[in-house]
Length: 359
Image (tube, rainbow, N blue to C red):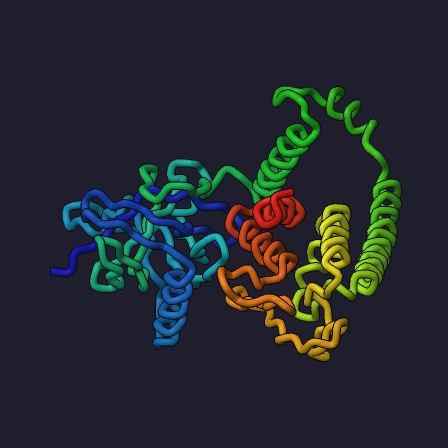
């Protein structure tokens, strides 16, 4: 059996075309389903109506009173005939040619709403009890609509309806304006105008925006110049301590000089003192360590920048590990402490210095 789905809850604006179905999901308790009326449903129903209307002698779709045509025991006279359907952003609209009694009923306010009818077999099953109608069978005028959100059929001219719609828009605008101005929701017109009088003119706002844009450009230029100056300063320091900074550690020292220049300079100065106090190169720089010959003319082993490397100081044997350069030990130990405990290198260096030489 082809069960029909009747709708008696639909408000329609009177603009020549009558809204016959709004967009939304609408529960139908009698059928136990949810009717999904979206733009796709309206597009398909309008297209199906256009295709059906090309049949010769097409009279249109019946608009009756309270769906009485579906009940054999009640009158089935026509209130009007649907001669066209349109799919719009707000729903499905019908062009209706009213009968004499239908026009009298609508204009007199005896019936104020429309109600569409479609068959379940003409609906797409979307699952979970949701159905999308794709073909309109007929409609009815009623005072007991089922699709919520409709505008009454009659007793409002299009001009009046337009004024109402504009009034709703202005109400929303005023509510947002009042909230934006920080006023109470019930603020009167005088309070709103007074608050607005203190707002800057549009030209002033534009001037401020232009000024901010110019300041941003200048700020970006200063930041770029500052980065260049910092880079030049770091390069100068790297050059000043070339004797104790190896090529492999330049990246590390560059980062330390950028993050904490003062502490990094203190640590580098301490490395210079250790190197000078020992009378020999620490192997941290590229200098004479690269020649393989020390100041005394003795051949030295190359120094590798690896934690496992154990450089040997000239003239000493390798027993008990005492052949390691103190400076290298301090440096390597400082790296270990800094990495393990997350402390600045200068702090780690002083702790390593105490561990190695006990000062």
